[in-house]
Length: 272
Length: 360
Image (cartoon, one colour):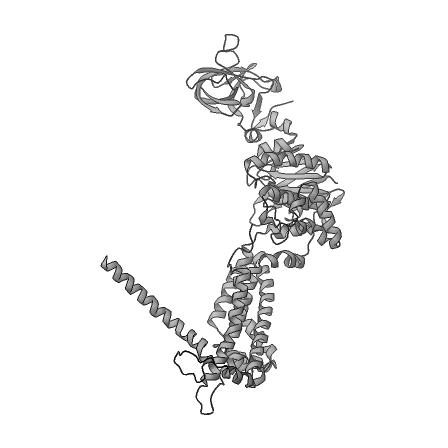
């Protein structure tokens, strides 16, 4: 009995420590923006809005959030559209070596990450005149996300019965009509998952925009965050914490919205 | 409305599996036709080839007067109900039924009106706003039927239309489908592995085995005079007794007993020939004693098993180590261990030579 109680106490202590480890930074993020002179400690805030005032006056802060939105939504749309078409084709058409191709794509894209391919990508962007262009960045980010997106979506497509499409086909629907009327609605939860995943990926990506966008007016929030210093070269905790909070809110809202609407089912489409 | 004609239709899957082997078949306009066979016999492939979902390797599919062998499914003027009904789960009943019209670019108001009409005919008017997930199996089936009716196609194809329903509903749906088909008068081909379903619903049926049609005929013909031992064994809720026999003049020696040569084979057998004697348990009259005092013309044996079939019993006799079955009406069933006699009806018994029916 004593052993059981001690074991329980030990277990809950461990849980508490782990919980604190993850909660304290979040508490800091919630309290520091409302504190007039934040430090690295978590303190009870004095509920000032001066920090928000300061971030609003910062010339690049709000535009950078807009840039982040533009980049992530643009990339998500491109990735969803292209991966849906590719995954549908790969799921329904038997090609010799199809699975090998998919695995190779996935493997290569996860080994040769953006970081590893940074120099050639930069070179490529320069040659194509896509340096310092948000469109160029969207294309490059999409390229990086597509293999994994196709792989995930193909799984969704595989699990939807073919008879839906065959039925539409017998009624005379063209392949594009079948995709639009039947396949896309059936795999909508999958498409939503891919979209959220792509947005979150681009939203948090620092390296690619840092490398490829030199104009500060085009840079997204993740890059602008890096520039929030005081005149003394110290991290400006007032701006950093406030900007950090603003930076996280849209992603959290998106998760809540999509989770409510689609429930993040990872398989099956809609089944009767 | 149109007839369907298959000429030397062949389908070979990549890898060399021959699913259809030079099939010839004519289904006249307005007929309710069943494709029956065990799983893997090619019946679903045949249906899908008629629909155009599979491309024929050889031969031709003709619907009406038009050779549609190389026409896409949408251009064949046919409509199909799939085994799982394939109702679009994200559309309500109205949109599902109206979908074929949407493809034909009928205006929304008009196609909803026509969908409503067809659905009302099948008693679906109160379910128009429901999604397939909110419907019972029987309702889903009727929505699927309404959807093919909305196409006003020349021919309907049903793939195992009843297999997704529970046993009770299946009987109801059987009657309903047959009545509907009769009213609509549209040429309809359906696939089933259930011989009772085919016998009950079809005007005519084809029994298939390994990509080949083994017999075509009305349910009565197929039931009473199976053209070969395969069909004989496949058709009927209790399988036909198929017994090795030797011809002895105008009698057959079956399991050590002598039975008269059946009417159908009279005068066609050579003395001493080895054949297979077939009689359905339903046409095998069981009696505890021989009718006229002698065991002439009957199979004498011992009752091994008695199975209750409801209004009748299936009695299994051991006749000199050969199993013979007979159907006995309720009330007169024997006890296990009794001596008994099974007298095959001469006008219903059949003889098979090399697996094929011996007949004029």
